[in-house]
Amino acid sequence: MKAYTDFARLTYTYKITDPAAVVDVLAAYSTIELLTESSETRDAADRLRTEIIQLREAADEAEWEEEQGRTTTTDVGLEYANQQVLDARDEFIRRAKDELGIDQL
Image (cartoon, rainbow, N blue to C red; front, side):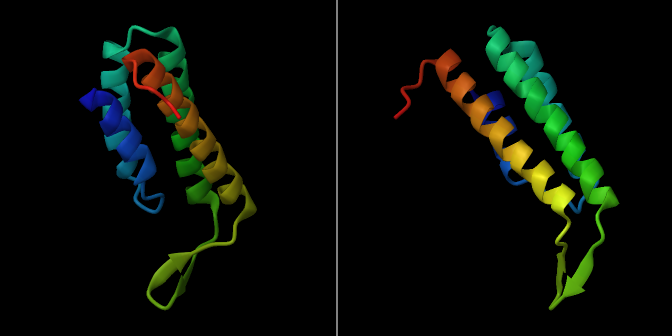
């Protein structure tokens, strides 16, 4: 269960301005890949991994500005990529809960 929660946590707290953050996500993904017995969970984890990588690429291409000590952007492509990650994360969590037998509301 820890592998599933680590992967979900890392994809939720992922800092897109930190290129090294993807390494932690990939490490957590590899654990899921080894442990899961569900093809649905594996597929959902694979999609989430792919979307995180695409989000990182979109972050590299976005134009960033510094405002009041914060790094911001209004890049539409980045917003779209971020939404894809959120959707993929929701699907992964749903599939992981199914596999682990956790009731969903």
